[in-house]
Amino acid sequence: MLDAVREPQLERLADHPALVARLCREVGKTDGLLLTVRVEDTFGMRMLNTDGSEAEMCGNGIRCVARQAQAYVGEKDTFDLFSGGKRHAIRREEPIFGAIPTYCVAIGIRRSTPDFVPSMGRAKGFVGEVIEQLDPTLKFTYLNLGNPHLVAAVEQIDLDRLSMLGEKVKSLQEMLPHGTNVSLYRPLGDQTIYTATFERGVGLTASCGTAMTACSTAACLLGYCRHGEPITVRNSGGMVRCCSMLSDEGLVTTLSGNATYEGEGEMTLDLEKETFALQGAFRPSEEERAAYDQFLKTIQAEKL
Image (tube, rainbow, N blue to C red; front, side, top):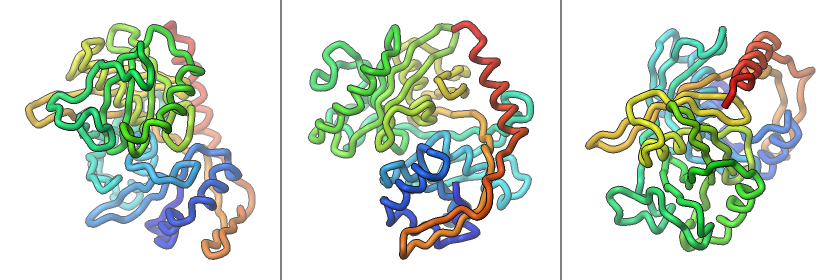
């Protein structure tokens, strides 16, 4: 995550996909690059994937950007952030565990977009239906949270199967002209689900915020969970809470979770030469990392 409010020229990184890919690969082996930027009367996020492509929205990323933007908005507990040209309401919340900083983002969800051709013209969208070209047995739900998602409920999550689905999507350009994120989720009862995601432009990922949001929303639409009540969403990277609200105005689902700093450092970046160099050692945030490690141990010890 880089502060392009303080250094506006960093926004030009979006025009250098090869440099973004190298930064993600060589600086901490990250699964994306976040830019905190100034937008209109507030601030925003730009999310660049490991292949240099730009994502319209990132549920985990926007919480981290919210924490960085907090330094500019002051002590306000609520403010707005832009991502993908859309304004999102942000709320700072009580920590989910110990002193781990926690933020909530409200995400408006569309059920019908040109990103998934079969959804067009359907008032209630594409919910719990088979896509023969992708998998003849799974029942998918399509949701667009600023970025597109296909999600399906399963009894057990098979990561090899998920990888195959994520790769297969790339061959379905007439149906999915811009690709899509693909997730499998396992309903666990009592407003709890477990998710796994193949992220567009990244691959299998330990945690995808918009995917967890999409899965919890789909679980409500299909009756596995209840609208208007908190849903615990877990994956291999941790846990968040979602709440899906359905009204005459449409679908809005909130996503609440941590914004934990792994550490910080400085680098010099030459966009013209596409070179970079770390200045000194990376400084880990030992206290925050220890708190999150303890959080993971606590939730992993719970029986699913």
